[in-house]
Length: 212
Image (cartoon, rainbow, N blue to C red):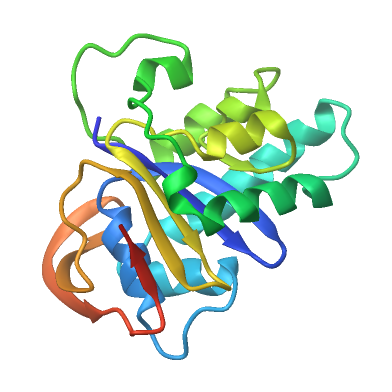
């Protein structure tokens, strides 16, 4: 299953989600738009112009996470200042993030997967809805709220982990088996999880850092 983890940071906090490989270029293309996205919502909105189901998947996934979070007896979802400080310090030195072997998709959803198959946003969201009572860190879409979710947000899945720090304009490829991510490239529009015959082009502004 060609999925990877995407962890996004803005001034309000950190979210992390598992999504198909094509989401990577859509997010980078979203970063390249003018005016530059300033927060999670504006980046997701920009990226969804290239991948129509992305924003709906992430926002709905966060709604499910919040519902499960409250049902687990929690009364707030803000990341503690200390955890946020530690995460930002870690991301300030990308070389300090250890490269880990990809996590098997079956480990995430609690069942073995013998064949590599594509998965849609709808299927990922349906899996999330079924996870009530399961550790919140195992959700396909999550907020970083404690040590467990922070560790999960830094864990590569299948083909990798990419972290986007929006205020700092930094894209960190912790692990990327998808392919070479270029500052200027083209990608294919996706609609409802399906590729189209239309292509888009992007050029990442010089203000953005692309690491490594």
